[in-house]
Amino acid sequence: MKRFFKALSIAFLVLSIGAYSAVIYGATAIPDEFNIAADESIELSGIFSAQESERISPADSSGAGGEYKTRVTALGVIPVKEVTVNATKRRYVGIGGNVFGIKLYTKGVIVVGMDSVTTSSGSADPASAAGIKSGDIITHINDKPVLNSQQLTDAVEQSQGKELRLTVDRNGETANLKLKPAMSVNGKYKAGIWVRDSSAGIGTVTFYDDSSRMFAGLGHGVCDVDTGKIMPLNNGEAVRARVNGFYKSSAGNPGELCGVFSDVALGSLRVNHETGVFGELIRPSGAKTLPVALESEIKPGKAQMVTTIDENEPQYYDIEIIKIYPSSDLSSRNMIIKVTDARLIEKTGGILRGMSGSPIVQNSMLVGAVTHVFVNDPQQGYAIFAGRMLDTLDTLKNGERPAA
Image (tube, rainbow, N blue to C red; front, side):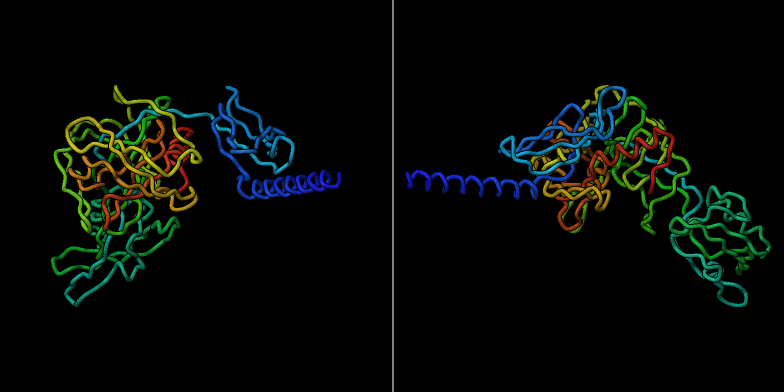
């Protein structure tokens, strides 16, 4: 009898230690918050299970979404912890992968450089004296909006050397400066600044939103080549383009798609944002519809990139998601990807400039878009979560301006 109670005590002790260990493990390993699709439930492995305990916010009118508390238990009876569940309505979009031409016109003019003005009495630096800096965006002259570089040139040449009042956007803050043009040896008044008011290039469409007839592309903003800053968009067009070749990538020398623009406008550009370019664009026939993955559904492992490298339709190529970063880190660099498709490596050497925006598909869901190529290893690059691009598009649909 003593042996029986001793064995029973040992068994109880082992079970107690096991249960305690399970609780400790579950409390640390199970996240405090889950983001899931509204028609799904959270998945817990092994001995853990979950049951809704408290509704925090109701579902929407369609019965989808909402936020609630869930009680996690081990073996169905041992309390482990309480977690918050955010249920989101599953979103569906049309997959892109096709190239488009970008014609972008800035809001104001961007200062990309400064130079001295040679006058009859020597060298002068009007821009530096006024406090102008590279990267400044000149939005107004004498309280009148500046729409292009020619307006700035005309205002300076017609100033007769009188002081001009400039309104400048500098890193999101407004500065008021006074510029006194100098008479150059050729008889014209000059400011001693180089400016840019437009940009053009090709990129790749990431997805189409049928409900709004809007699109998202690039996965990163269009930046000025000299200052590296996102160009403030006044207006722009998405135009038809076709790939007529490319420069192959190699270590230390990323390649580039070569495209030809046409005068056929496909749509308009509304926003140039760190998560991509967005605007109105009608979805072409044949674009496949896929669900958008939640961040929690994206896993390291095999995936596919949809992109265009010739005059044919977009093609699927094998890649691997190497690493995933939290969405709070480096907004256009949420994943590291690697091209594994021998066909693409043989043809292009890996990722090319112009592939930015190429959709990434995993488990039949849109998970992200290619954004950057690694200079020293063009088979690898960065990608952004598709959900981040969708969030930006949603603010645009609601008539808001996406936060920078």
